[in-house]
Length: 162
Image 1 (cartoon, one colour):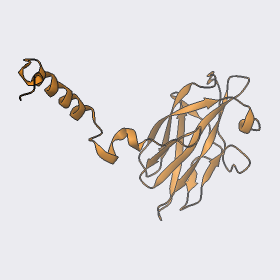
Image 2 (tube, rainbow, N blue to C red):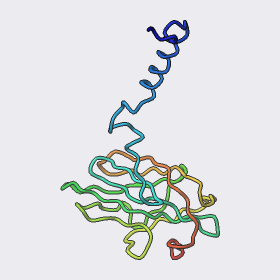
Image 3 (cartoon, one colour):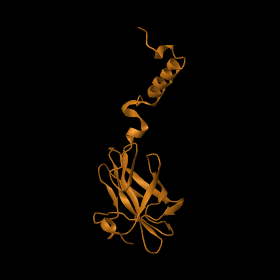
Image 4 (tube, rainbow, N blue to C red):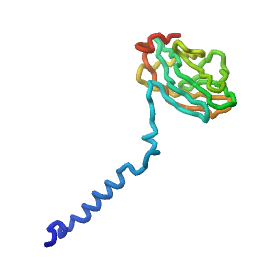
């Protein structure tokens, strides 16, 4: 006994649309899909430029509208590199001791108790939760552009001051 649904003229086109939509919207891009490559385990952003890794980069807003750069930059290559400049919101950020050397596996740490470098950016005037474009230029590695999160000066960042 034939099925009554197969005689319906809309059954096969409807079935084809359902299967097509399932096929086209499935996770067929695999484990290398751009959305599966996102990792942000801290408040700060992370990015690599060759053997130079930027980890936990963010800005701590200050009461006067300035911001303090917080983050770690590490070079894993045997050849030394250097941090030549940092621009925040298109404005050059002053860096203590620039250009900062990046020896192999010797982190340059901005902000916090372990800091060995500092950068205080005047006139950022952003509130917590906003993002600010940051560009870091190196001596050898390609420049890095990222959007750093602005956090308020409280909690774990309460001690981050000018």
